[in-house]
Amino acid sequence: MADAEDGDQGGQAGGVLRRMLRSRSQAEPPRAPVLPPAPPPTPAKAAATAIGRAAERLYGLGIASVKVAQGVMTLAELPEVLPDLPLVVMLQGPGENLGAISLCPQTVASLIEIQALGRVTARPLERRRPTRSDATLCADFINMLLTELAAETEGLDGFQGIAGYRFLTALDDPRPLALMLEDKPLRSLTFDLRIGDTDLRDGQVLLVLPQARKQPAPKPQPTPAPVATPAATVIKPSLGAPMQQAPVEVVGVLCRRKVSLAELRGLAPGRVLQLPRACLTDARLETADGQILAAGKFGEAEGCHAIRLRDRDAAPAAETSTPARATPIPDPPEDLAQPDPFRPGTAVAAPAEGTENATILRQAR
Image (cartoon, rainbow, N blue to C red; front, top):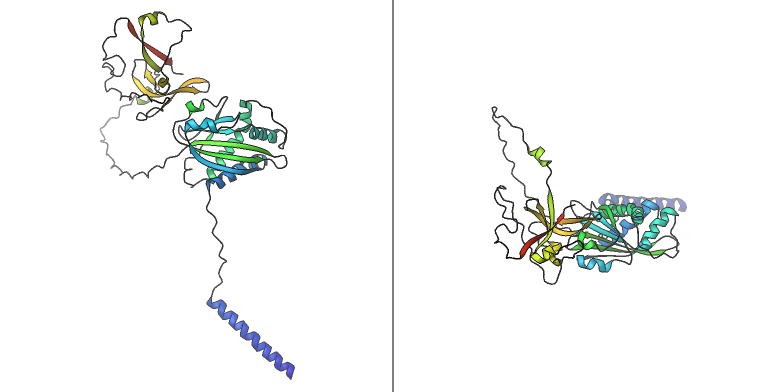
């Protein structure tokens, strides 16, 4: 009898607990556990992830970012932060934007070894300048790094214009960077790396891109009403398309200066003419008749002389402590049959006796 009473009491207690648990579960639905919010992405973390993923996807190479530093620099500061004997590669971005990336000799050697030997060694490196063959072997890694970096930094402030950059050409000497890049603020990313799994090498990669400007949202334009064309209107063929293919001869003018008649007669092959330093930033592009088309900065590209054109309203970069004032580029005349007011000397009095205008011209290549 005692055992039966204990069993009845235990069953009643179990039923009470089940009813309490059931009522509580019906009153309060189950909640998912609250997890702490994920930390916001930072440019340094995104860049470290991008370079590690690029090496892993291409070669299965482990690259650990010891430090990633971002900053803003000027064109004059760029040569001071380049490593010793770097591989410098020009990058082509959207439109006419140009950037640059430099790889230290240790990074270049690691990328070549992983492709040739399948691993990174710790052998000492020979001190030499990088070649274009080295740049070709590193081109895939550079393009993959730029692709991953654009994906990782999407939506981060200051990295809006980083997408679309690709390998363009390698430079035998980093000095032409000052002529090929625009003289405006540059955004930089410096990677301090540990390359390899067992035989580790310390490497460095420097990425420099023009700083993107925030573009205001375009205002909606009203849709113009369709204009009805009369049935009797005859549309004549236009000569616009054929004229766009007509050849035009242009001349690159480095500068103009006056020389005496005796100096002019004394010109001979090998004679050195002194030119103002400011002429490098104020080179002109003219027609054969002397009409000024544009102005820009004289430099070099792909082994040829070149003029990098600038906007009409943009002033040339200062080359000396006392910047020279650049003559603004006038608008083309409405009637080209009239005397050209843009050609120097058109409305100027005749030169004094014993002098003659000498124009130093350089055919645009």
